[in-house]
Amino acid sequence: MKQYITLIIVVFLPFAILFGQERPNILWITIEDTSPQFIGCYGNQSASTPIIDRLAKEGVMFTNAFSTGTVCSPSRSTIITGVPTYKLGTGNHRSAYSIPEYIKGFPTYLREAGYYTSNNFKTDYNVAEQDKMIEASWNESSRTAGWWNRDDDQPFFSVFNFNDSHQSRTMTMPFEWYENNVLKHLKKDEIISDDAFDMPPFYKDTPAMRREFARVYNAIKLTDHKIGELLKRLEEDGLMENTIIFIFADHGEGIPRGKTNGINLGYRVPFIIKIPPKYQNISPWLEQTEEELVSFEDLAPTVLSIAGIKIPEYLKGRILMGQNRSEERKLLFLSSDRADNGIDMVRTSTDGQMLYSKNFMPFMPEVKNIRYVNIGPITQEMRKDLKLMKMNELQETLFKVRPDEILYDIHGDLWETKNLIDIDTNKAKVLRQNTYESMIEYRDLHLLPEYMIAEISQNEPPYEWRLKQENFDPEKILEIAKLVGVNTTKSIAELAVHLTNENPAISYWSGVGLFSAPPDQLTVHLNDIEKAMDSEHPLTRAYSSAIMYRDTHSEKAEMILNEMIHHTDVNIALQTVNLLLYLDDITPFIGAVQKLEATDHIVYKLKAAALDFLTIAGLEDPSRQN
Image (cartoon, rainbow, N blue to C red; front, side, top):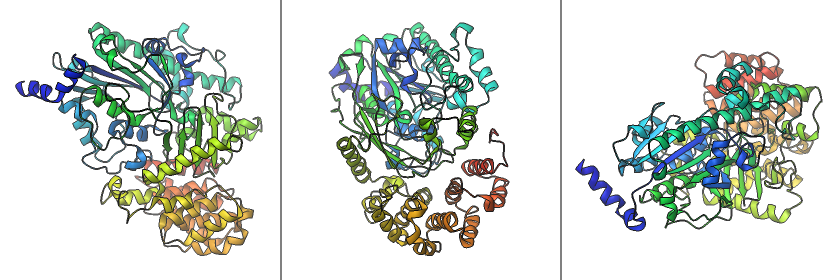
């Protein structure tokens, strides 16, 4: 006990001197898969979220808070480490690659300084040796963890993760499952009916779609109710006046076009901070609504600063409050990569009013083939309407090739229906430049295909590898990658030249760019593409073969693709199957994919891609759970 007291005096004496009060408790409430446009205090009068609304009224509601990923494990990787995924190499969903030993789960620092740290209960940190990080970060991480297990008068940092608004509830699981896990836990007068809200315009407004979309409102209602129960316990324990409360979602709404997409609906989150009166001296905010730019990179340094702990050098996020508050940003850089079996790469910049994204894999639509999305009843309803040509032009765009660049007015055009990339060219230029400069400055690891990140991780943390100039030149790679989707005669010619580049990342992006181009623009380059089928770089072979099969029905290309479906590197096999998902004629590959799907111990993401392929081929039930 004497050692514990000494530690408090040494580490936290600066806090006591600066603020003249005891260290605050900190309560984090994270909710899953939720965009602010579905919460009452953010302007949705159809939502029923009185508890969250009350917190916003008593605290500060942020209108420009963004996750650093659009699916759970990448965003939670940044939350727990304070380091963005494009530096760690953790942007691909559930990839678990190595990180340096000196990068800790930040609650470790709180715990070492005398805080009681608890997590109830989700982790999903997307790093190698996750169990070690959990053990070091938390006094307790379980379904029963909470501040109530600490020593008397010990300050706490307690996290509670509510999964009732998760995509499984709002769209993926069968309706009967949703009834048992959501509706049965609400009173009849609490249930939001199918006709009690406006449909987003990118969805067809039908009874069937409304039945499914009501799940979003009811799942958030249940979440709000459970948050109320937690806050009631905090108050009954006499801790409300000593606790700073954060509430935020882990990324955007878990509906088709939201979660997994590098647009505002995927990134922007509700974010509220309630600071009790005794700690108001550390709050810089005078209004209840705040427009400053916030990202998940800011969470770790902010909490450590509140607790009076020295911030490690590798944490580069902002400190949001207190004497050491950082200067506000003018621009924010964001990223979105693979989600489950759906490969992707999007890089984004926003000033809070406008949001720009570069789609580095535009051949995939916003509702791409991700098994966890495809099995959802709402997705199946949408695909049925698409097949029957019952959708309007906007609704159909969700299933079409994406533009390589988008620019949305995210406050004036809430549902991102009008791409301003060719209209507001000055803003597009500023945000595009910030995006590319950020990728170079931060040495964005995801310019490498995933199989390369995995190989690096076997020998050293990719975070450190990327800093060695002799290993990695992001500027040279980006010069080719940014040509993807441009589709001019000049850009396609340059891509064709670099298809044989000795750098596997450069030849990879050349292949992606050529596969993304219209076939009639590739005719003069078919000889170069055919030669690249013999490349030593596996994904160059895959993309070149996919192009040659698509455009010429090459038997050699067909043979190579069938072989690469069973490549020993799961990430290469996954990319190959993903390419097949976007070909018109997939018949010659059915046998190879059936054998793949039937293979014992197949990795989840590859199994999911195989099932999506067989569904497209008409050989699999689209609603089958993996």
